[in-house]
Length: 133
Ligand code: THU
Image (cartoon, rainbow, N blue to C red):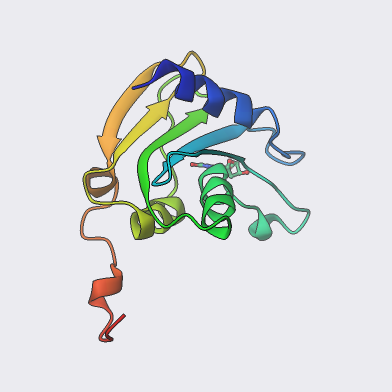
């Protein structure tokens, strides 16, 4: 784990728009280009339209032309390292390998290292689609 990237995930959480849950989350993705992308959760009065920090960072990066990531950092104001939601696990898996390291961080930057495959075994993959893409 790189301490600087963990700190960037914590910094990203400060931009969270969370008037409903008051629960700030920050994410950092290290992209294939070497660039680092930060994201935070963005909530909405129509609660179901809220976007998690991980997907904010990922959509930012992909919209800038990134198609792969070599490391993921997720920070939550939690006592124990945060556990990302199932939707984000699936979305991250699209652009990561099974072995991509994922660092789950607590509010004190205590880290738990895991991988995409450990977080979502047997996840749905583009190769499961019966197409040539
Ligand atoms: N949230 C994230 O941003 N990432 C996670 O991994 C878990 C949950 C957000 C969604 C919502 O804005 C708030 O945390 C409470 O669920």
